[in-house]
Length: 94
View 1: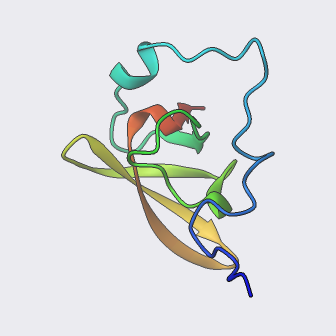
View 2 (view 1 turned 135 degrees about the vertical axis):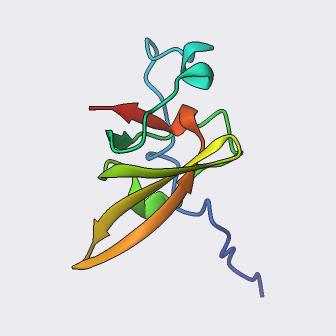
C-alpha cells in the first residue's frame, strides 16, 4: 500500500498558485517593517525559506520584534495569541 504524504506543503496546490500577472520582484526581499506596524501574511510560492505555515495565509498581525532577517508577528488564531516567524518577502504592510 502507498503511504500518504503528511508534509507541510500537502493540499497547497491552489493556495500556493500565483496568477499570470503576479510577478515577484526584488523589492519584496528588501522591504523593512518598523516594530509595531500592521502586516498581512501573503506567501510567495517561489521562496520556501522563512515561509509560515499554510494556516496563517491572509492573517493580519503586528510586528513585535526582528530576529536576524526575519520578523516575529503576533496574530490571533482561534482565540489565542500566537507568534509567527516569517521573512519579509512573505509579508505585506497594511
